[in-house]
Image (tube, rainbow, N blue to C red):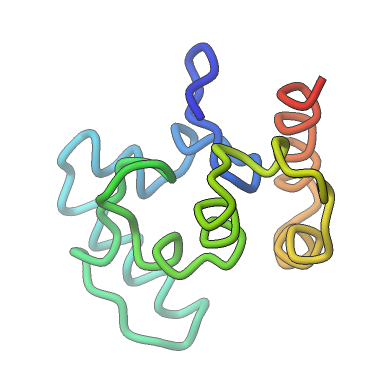
Length: 118
């Protein structure tokens, strides 16, 4: 969902603040490689730089994490542009996603969705 100068993901994050989104928009393959390496260590997997390309949650080209995001999948299935449009906001699926992040990230995401909801 585009809101002013933000691209708000289903979960409430601003895609334009994501390092993978920024590196993609800058076409910076070195940054994408660095992100892939760091995320691979965090997730104990093997991501390639091409797995990091992302144009935001509502685009066709998504990083590997966003492609498999349960919150995004649920929003798409329900035909919403963000979780704020859902009758079940804030649901357990969204709470679980937020709980997997740091508190600073989810409080900003929730504030974005609350602003859209009102």
